Image (cartoon, rainbow, N blue to C red; front, side, top):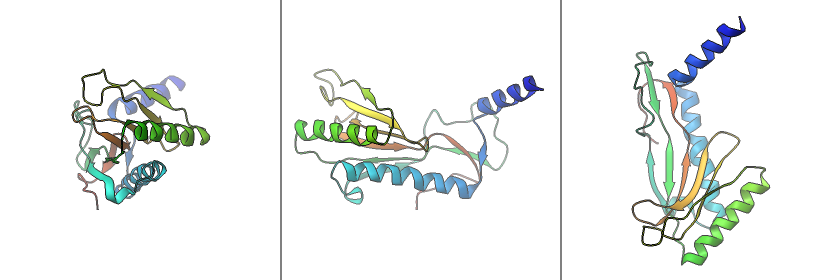
Amino acid sequence: MLLLVGLASYFDSLAGGQVMSETAFRERMAQTEEAGEEAVWTVGSEPDAVIDQKDMAAPSCADDFGFDSNGVTRDQPTVTWAPDFADRSAYTTAVDVLRKSWSAEGLSVESIPAPAKGEPGGGLPGIRVTNEDGIELSLRPDWYSGKAILTADGGCVRHEGYSVDWE
């Protein structure tokens, strides 16, 4: 019996996890945005003033093997803010402030190595954490532009209904 339960769990995770109701998914979207807004406030910016984009699509969040039945969709709620730091020192201070804040919450903070000199954002380290709701938060230089971005990623979620837009 234990073997059957283990196999069922394995195939469920392979399929992408449990299917949320549309209501639960919308709550996940709100949780994701709220977690990011809290981090943006922590670094001294007003979230509505520095919001960069809200996105639902991610290449890694796809039903490549056809596990999802009709009426089940995969989305990855992600919100990005672009706080404007006066200089490199202000950015590194923001990284330190977030590190202290997240550590005080008992979260395990992971350092993101700085891009090499000459690359966008070269020399600016980043940090990442996954909060108690499983939302990944990060502050780091953008890979293409090098500007500082703070991202809240709600993860790939299977839910009832069709792709949803942010409200």
